[in-house]
Length: 625
Picture 1 (cartoon, rainbow, N blue to C red):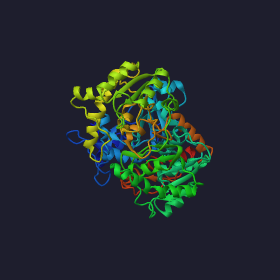
Picture 2 (cartoon, one colour):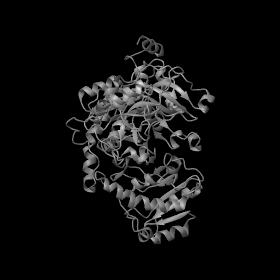
Picture 3 (tube, one colour):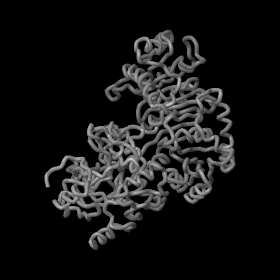
Picture 4 (tube, rainbow, N blue to C red):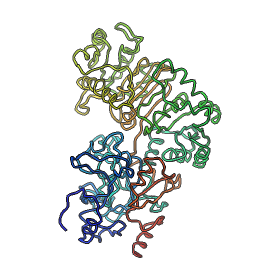
């Protein structure tokens, strides 16, 4: 038949006509790489725009926002492969993209459709020239698909691929795995663990890989340590319990019922805490903004700490894994013991994360050492801004400046007043100084905000970004920019315990390698920040007695290591539910409503039955059709 103008809704008549013309394969069709012809069109699940090209967002099934559409089959580039999907992973990112929560995914690309789905299982049916020459991936290979894409020729990729224009395919890109054919980078494709059946083999990389990196790269956990895990009976929380227990950690899981407590113990937790227990139910809140309520809030968490100590030989947590957002994060941080480290990879109940700081103080030199400050790196020091600093001298900030200069770092300074700025420039060989007093006089849009605002009203976030972060970022860029760092992001920000500018500091410092350090005692004060800037940019916050490290997804090497651990039987994958192609919107609606069953979901594209043991069983079942 003639050409069509995608995205076309997949009406019965259109699909029938395309199949009859040989221009589209029906769902469930066998595909024999090298023999079956690749069609020009395919079916996909995604979201589209209206007549004015505005994206039609909403709940997947209830609002019928998720549409079955017909789109072209793309050709792979030199370093890509085309995969015929047998299954595709279902995850929360799909539901958020369909709903446009928190922002429309269409803002990140100009394609008139957005196909969700991040990962799955399929056959390689075509490869680009560079992939063919390299030889690791060949036509006919059965592969599972990791959803991380990056720029493999960017120099930063040699440090960690996640530092190089990293995106989640199907969430940040419009070409996810809920389509029959998908172009993937060669770095996304792996031989599945041989001890998994074909339903399981395409179900786990997005979620379990995130946990693998969180535990073994970001936290760098040590055996026999104490780990606290939020939501320990389901999803990524359960994955964290399984993986951590397999490596000899003592895991305490936060749950919401006795039934879920048993599930967490069955997964490997040695202890559980029910957040709905009478002594805890009113305590599971974030830190209030009112300073007069901070001490009372902190005291309300003591029953939680007592419960943890009672089950862990009197000790608090060495490590913690958080993902539930503002309603759990504050208490999870409170559970950290001296030297404890918390990581998080999401914030489902709210993106403003807050905590009450802990005690202890150290010299700035020690904190720079912990942050691995190196000659040539850049440091931003806050000077004179804490409430208890008056006049031109700020002893703590001066120690930080002197220490950073002794490490041969390039130093920029933010001062409160022009007088302080003049003093710093006279006394120290810094690269540049920003006076908040001058910035306010010269930039009408600048507004110093002494804490991160309540972002339940999204206008507050916009105001913070536009009036606080952007003017500071532009001014700082003029001081610290280099050819490899055109925005002038500092590698390390020296923060102050007597103020709450952590949110802007975490936005200013270098993505993926940026660090914020505190040296002063932080006990009794509230601090807050915008979660995505720390978790998705993998920034790190170092404090005298604790640490908060953002973590996000995983790199190809970590996927390879995880697959090997699964094949060796170190840990297994969750129960996998095979969902019919036509039921994709329902699966996403169930996830949106949080009514989905325990375990992983995959959409069935072309498996003739559930639980096929291996490729031989698949080919046999296809031949019998």
